[in-house]
View 1 (cartoon, protein in one colour):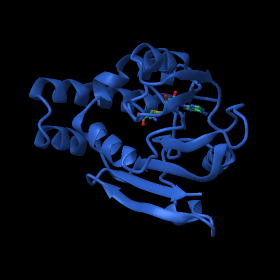
View 2: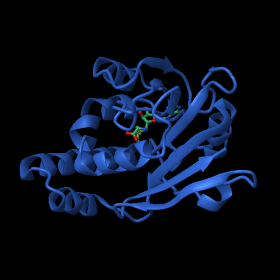
View 3: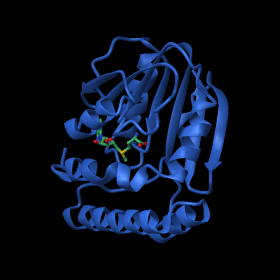
View 4: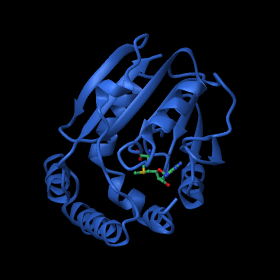
Length: 209
Ligand SMILES: C[S@@+](CC[C@H](N)C(=O)[O-])C[C@H]1O[C@@H](n2cnc3c(N)ncnc32)[C@H](O)[C@@H]1O
């Protein structure tokens, strides 16, 4: 993977940027779709912000140890697996729900990640896929944070960090971003539980598979 160093640098500031009202709002929408028991696998779990408090046993999978360390230390996931989202090494049909949040838009092979997520699902499991809406920029996110009550200093600090991570990514070409096509992710047998935008910022596609 050509992202070398990018995700470990991001891990140091991830919560400072994203432990925010926006993430809280997205997590609430995601949790409302989940069974609340059984096993939830979170592919590309990061620091576990999306799985936090989900009320099920969460297995977090991430390629960046520093992200997993934080998720475990904060008690947001029960088990951390250092592996690729597209090749988790977990057994077939081991999860009542699988989350793929904020991963598909930068992953070089999003179809492989979705295929892996489907492999992990039991029959009738919930598959949740989220990604940022195209065109969203750091100023939009700052505005959103402020309107939704994030403390001014916190919001500006997050804004500065988000901008510098963005610059680092652009300069090093660590990740390139392109939003997936929602309809291409849906199989004929899926039941679509949600296919829309949360808070004007995040596409949320939830399927019963
Ligand atoms: C933008 S963060 C999203 C974290 C979390 N899902 C959330 O929504 O807060 C992307 C995460 O994917 C991880 N990642 C990047 N490429 C990966 C891959 N191929 N397999 C597994 N994790 C990966 C990064 O280390 C990072 O923790």
